[in-house]
Length: 56
Image 1: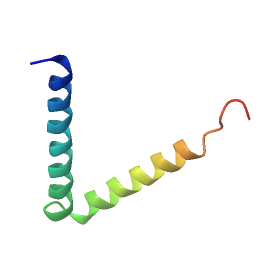
Image 2 (image 1 turned 180 degrees about the vertical axis):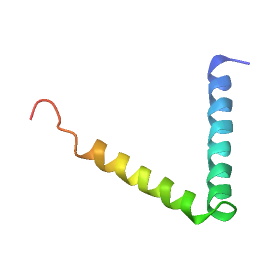
Image 3 (image 1 turned 30 degrees about the horizontal axis):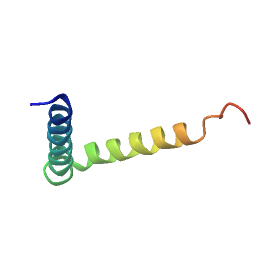
Image 4 (image 1 turned 135 degrees about the horizontal axis):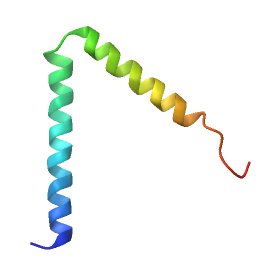
């Protein structure tokens, strides 16, 4: 197996794990965890989006 195929397989496995974890979070766990995750994601996105860019 080549290095590229190994990386692609690892990436696909990671994507499946993340997707299944998200489904578990939404459908099985409590709403508090979902609210916490969405809030943390929105805060991280806003924080990264509003960072000053060099060269401006």
